[in-house]
Structures are given as C-alpha cells and as structure tokens.
Length: 108
Image (cartoon, rainbow, N blue to C red; front, side, top):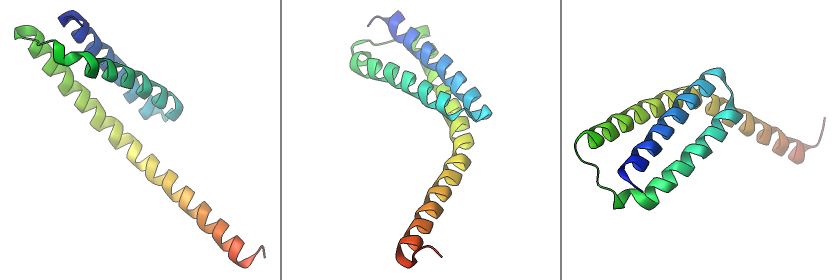
C-alpha cells in the first residue's frame, strides 16, 4: 500500500462511517450492519498493509484527523444503538422466560 492508498482507505472508512450514523439515526439496522461489514473489510486491508507505510507531515496529520472523526462517529453510533440493543436483549430474555415457563408448567 502506498501513502495515497492508506489515506484513501481511511477516507473511504470515514464516508462509510458517516453513512452508518445516518442508518443508525433512521433505525435502519440491516443497512448499518452491511456498512459495518464494508468498514471491516477496509480495516482488514489496513491491518495487513498499514505497518509497511509510515505517514509523515501533512499525511500523518490528515490520518490523525480522520481517526478522530471515526472515533466521534463510533461514539454517536454507539449512543444510538445501545438503547435498541437493550430493547432487543429484553425482548429475547422475556421470550426465553415465557418459553421456559410454558415448558415447565404447560400451556394454560
């Protein structure tokens, strides 16, 4: 990977992360999941190649700025998904409890 490739990959991740924020704000959980997988592919590419490229000067500053924005987007997404995940967990747990009660005591 060249310096430009690394920066382009980070920029692509940033654009996808912005789309993830929009999907989370709209409650489009399937879209959010698909976008997350696409970001994951970029992360894997960086992990495989990023150590070979040492960014300096303006390129390094740009990379740091992108990472900071990625972290900000991650926080927004987490804040939006946490209540949904709690609700989903509660639904799964209550469904499991109902099933166990039905199995233990039979249908009334």
